[in-house]
Image (cartoon, rainbow, N blue to C red):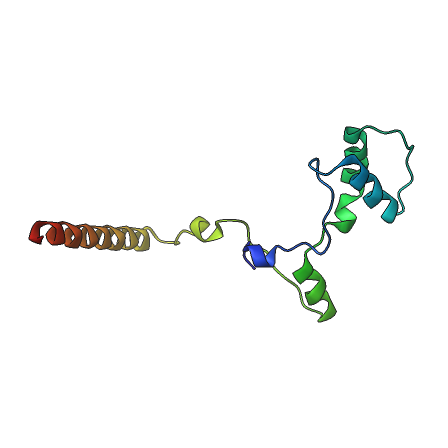
Length: 115
């Protein structure tokens, strides 16, 4: 599965440093985390970051687990990481791209000259 935005919807939003302190405290209380009350926001975020992996799950993953399937997530821009196994195929691919680029540019220049 690629990293499209509709595949990366979180099942539950976890606090970030942009959240208000009160909202972070409320989130921690909902999760049953015990901490000393007068905490500054960076200390609260340390607590959140320690338990975040338990709640940082994708909606699609939860759906797929119910149907006994497994998802393979590919890294971003994965299609650009593939290279052919033989240099000959690489040369042909580069030539083809060069020809397509030249043809496109040639058409554009011809249409400008004709106007």
